[in-house]
Image (tube, rainbow, N blue to C red):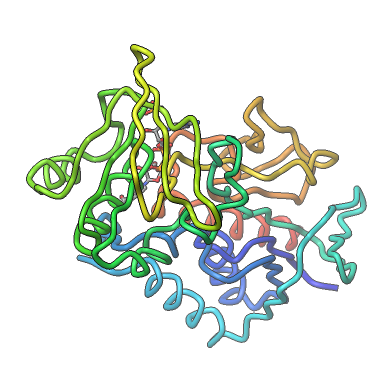
Length: 297
Ligand code: NAP
């Protein structure tokens, strides 16, 4: 029997762990893949207060080491259900606790076009920091108009010979600072008002086809495509204990409370206006503190 089970070892979940361990609570962190969550994809983090610049990997590893030094128990198991009596069910086991913090974040949104799955790892990637290095002096495209796409394009422009930045509008929602830097690079070509409609290649991705708002079709020869079109949550499995909005995010009251007492949500998995590292760790600390109060009662 644990005091709190945390589902997800990204910044929100590990921050909850940090606060709970410092309050001497018996906790278990369950993680399906690897610690760190989406911040692992960030080449550099430069908007976290008091840290000038740090890679996403280093940030995640520092936080992981911080909780491990406090004795954090982490099991790499995939959660498939939370029962109404708060039993957390994984593919392998069942665990019991007084409180649960859901910090499962969100996964990369897919293009949802033919051949997408076929080319994953064969020219198609959702993580420039992870896979960019395979494209030394090659031709790549980045799809998206948020900060992730802009940052990815900047990062890849330093590795690849040419980067096409494909975006469905002509305005970017990503940070102006990145956009300005991209505009100065002569190996970056903007392909705007355009959507990717097909991916082709024998074994490996060789060509993408885009269609613009005027229905013009263009074929672009590439070695790699990096898709950075945002994230989608994966909260369906929690539907019996939380309410979801129409996009699948967990509806939270007072930041972290779900509809079920003693089940909290922290980070990108919940409905919120700003999904950032700062807001994820903020949620993690609030959820832990609320759980501690409830356990005391
Ligand atoms: P995002 O801000 O949600 O941007 C997603 C982009 O993909 C948008 O430009 C959107 O186009 C486009 N898009 C969405 N669905 C699409 C589809 N089906 N086909 C084609 N394009 C599609 O996602 P993000 O860039 O991953 O950023 C997520 C959050 O992390 C943001 O809050 C961001 O500020 C933050 N972030 C911060 C940093 C940093 O501070 N260092 C770095 C990366 C990310 P529209 O614009 O037309 O909707």
